Length: 176
Image (cartoon, rainbow, N blue to C red; front, top):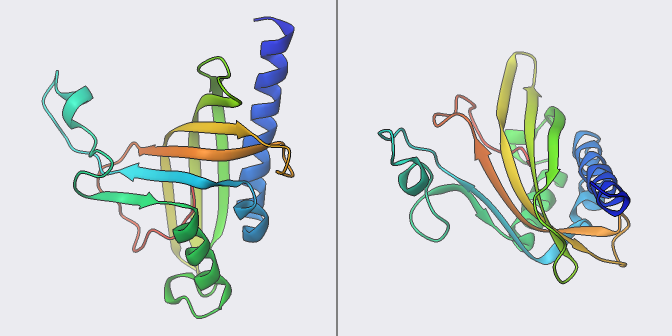
């Protein structure tokens, strides 16, 4: 790695850590400001498949069938607005979350101001008194350099791959 690569990695890490802190602090409007207008936010469902079929059949595909999330900036904004009404049955009172992000890697050289990034995550969610959920997996992101962003980057694409294929949570209102 050269100095330029290390500086890029440090910028990417700072962006992902800021994003996690905004979500955990419930600063959802500031988080929305980090999302590109043409954002793709996708979480496939996982399947148990025979050895050798993982690449082609383990995850549902975007636009083909069912997924946990297949959203854009507009739908995420509407989800935030619903939470902020105080009338969201699944988020009243608001969950407490902790987003931990690790194994952050820049997976390609920047092209046209965009960079591919992968990381592992653990999201802990606590609702009311006794509901506790843990989500673990990896993300594949595309970050776009943007002077208009308070963090210098915008999230242009996120694919969220959960390790589990059966969710035990009563709802899926957490942002990843």
